[in-house]
Each structure stands twice: as structure tokens, then as C-alpha cells.
View (tube, rainbow, N blue to C red):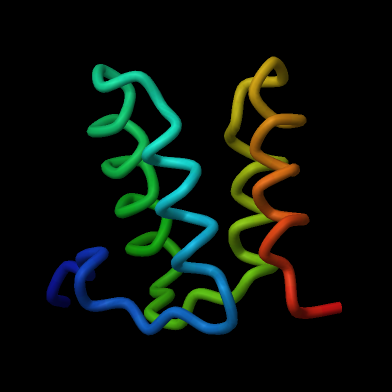
Length: 82
């Protein structure tokens, strides 16, 4: 099975805006690690379609507690799905 890359994803709603704002808010040394972790997740799940709730779930499950509130503000700012 071919590896899914971030460039291959279909982003629904504002999920791409959310992802980009969160990644861009990180210190440079963490950006690559977060991108890699996200690629591992999409490949484990076989996900090519990213919805806004996927971003919320990823924040809740993988973000360190001290960053969750900050990242959830980004999610809430762009959220269009109920």
C-alpha cells in the first residue's frame, strides 16, 4: 500500500486552515515532529479525507495538555461543522 502524504489529502470545511494555523504556531523544532505524527496517523487510519472533527480528535488525543486549550481555540475559530 502506498504511503499517504499530507499533500495527498482532501480537506473538508476549514480543516486545512485549522491544521496550518496550529502547525505554524509551533516552535520550529516541533513542526516536523507534528507533521510526521499526523502522517503516521493518516496512514494508520487510511484516511485521505480530513474533516474538522478529525482535527478536534487529534488535538484531544495527541496534543500535550498545556497546548490543548490554545489549539482548541483555533478549532473553535474556524469550525463550521456541528
